[in-house]
Image 1 (spheres, rainbow, N blue to C red):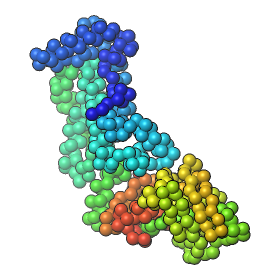
Image 2 (tube, helix red, strand yellow):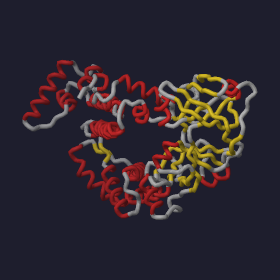
Image 3 (cartoon, rainbow, N blue to C red):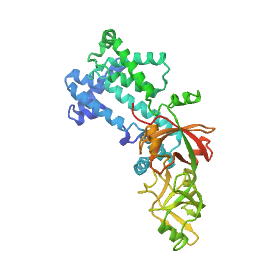
Image 4 (cartoon, rainbow, N blue to C red):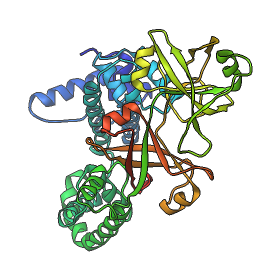
Length: 442
C-alpha cells in the first residue's frame, strides 16, 4: 500500500509539538514508555501519559485529539482512500473534484466516468472511508479527557427493542434516524469517569428508562410517516406487497428520451442555410414541443453519430443532449445537468446539409426530471426545484433518486430519463413510474 504524506493523518504527538504543548524529545520519551507498557500487556495512551507526568494539560490533549479527528474525517472520503491505496493519483482526484464542481455528479460518479477507477473499488473505498471516519470519532469519545453521554446507551437499547417489536424498516438509515431523533429529545447525562460508566448507566437506566421509551415511540411514528429517500427497502416492501397507498406513491408517465438537439435560430441558418426553419414531424407530449424532420450529425474527437433528431421550437442557445454511452462513442465527457444550465459544458461539431459549426459549449447528459403542472404539484406536495424518488417500473425495477421536479403552468405530468437509465431499469420507450415521498430530512 502506498500512502502519500499529504493523505496520511498525523500522529497525536505531532499536534502537541506543533501547538508547543510538548517538545519533540518529550514525545520520544512518552513513546518509549508507551511501548514499554505494551510489552507487558498494559494499554496506555500517549496523551494520558503526558498529563500524568505533568508535561501537558488535559485541555491541550483534548484539543489535539479533536484537531486530529477533524483532519482524519476530512480525509475519510472514498477519493482519499483510493489515493491512499494507490488506486488513483492525487492529480486524478483533483480532476474528479473539479468535474463535480461543474456538474451535479457525485465524486464517485465522476471518478468512474473519467475512467480512473472501477465501481467495485469505489464500493470498497466507501466502506473503508466510513470505518475511518467512525474510528476518528470514537478516538475522541474514548479519551479519558472527553466525557461520555450515558444516555446514548439507554436510547440505543430502546431503539433496538422498538424496531424488533415494530414493523418499521430495519435498514441502517431508519435505525439512525430513529436513534438520533430520540436521543435529541432526551436530556444528556455525561460521565467524566470512564471507569464508572456501567454504574451510571444502571442508575440513569432506572431513572430515565420510561422517558426513553416514550421518546423512541414518538420518533418511531415520525420516521414511519416521513422516512428519508435513502430508505429504499421500505418503499420496495410496500410496493411489492401491493400497498402503494401506504408508501405514498403517485403514478407518472415515464418516457425514455434518446439523444437529440435543441438549436438556436442562428445555428439553424449555419447548418441548413439562411432562412431555413424546422418542419414538424410529430408533436411531443409537452405542450408546444415537437420533433422536427430535420436531423444533424454530431462529430466528436473519437467518432460521430448521424441522424440526431432536432426538437423544436428554437432555443436561445444550442443544447445537445446525449447519454453516457454516446459520450464514449463521441469522446466527449458530458456532465449531468439540468436543461439550460450550459456554463462550463463541453462543445462539439454539428454537421448539417448546408455546413458545419463547432459550438464551444452546450453538450450535457440531461438530469432526470419530471414536468409537472401546478395542480399535480399541489396534489403530490412538491414545489418547483424539489427532488423526489421515483420507482421505474420495468423488468429490472429501479428506484431513481434525485429526480428534479419542474413545475410549469403549460406542462403535462411526465418524467424523462435517458436511454441508459431506461435500459438499466428495463423500461420501454413509454412506461409508468411511481413518485415516492419527496426527499427531505426527517
